[in-house]
Image 1 (cartoon, helix red, strand yellow):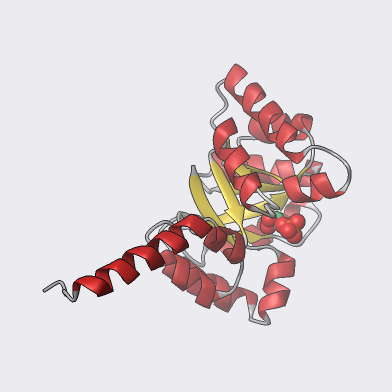
Image 2: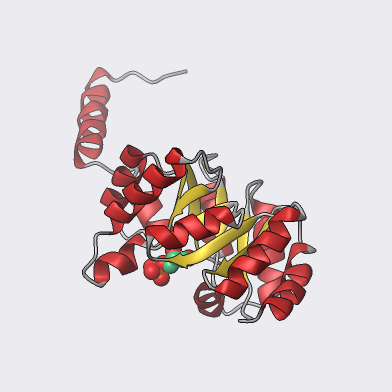
Length: 217
Ligand code: G3P
């Protein structure tokens, strides 16, 4: 499963990229606002920090203006992936862009039928929001299972990008289901490295090593 980070904070992106475990980045208008940075400038900087896809979202709601915005965004770098909302105009834009060889991430997916439509529109990625689905009394991970089943039934190549990931269990369940990608905030990705017994084990080994009076090298 690929790991994308869901942020527009370049410091966090650079830190995670240095681990060699980061496969891409997702942003959205809320994350750009949170960064306080210029959209074009920060997106260009992010594209240079990672080799994989960097999702940059259009804000227009109609197809012609979405196409104009996508035209501007895709010139930023070769690894820009245009993010469009799951609407009729968004999927029209998705079809036009993917037919032209541009990567498209269809966002704000909350049903398996919506995911089916996005795959039929040739989406590179579909982004089901598991956290927001859970928040509203639905089962976010069941949505991922349903989409996996449907995509496998018809050999759709659209990658399932689990979004709105809130904690480590979302990551674990995504991997068990066979999601292609998950995108999570930096803190959630960093939490995956932690285990109390790993920390306790290190402390124990260091204490015993000190007793030997030896050093390596
Ligand atoms: O980038 C889309 C998605 O990951 C947003 O997550 O936490 O705002 O629901 P959240």
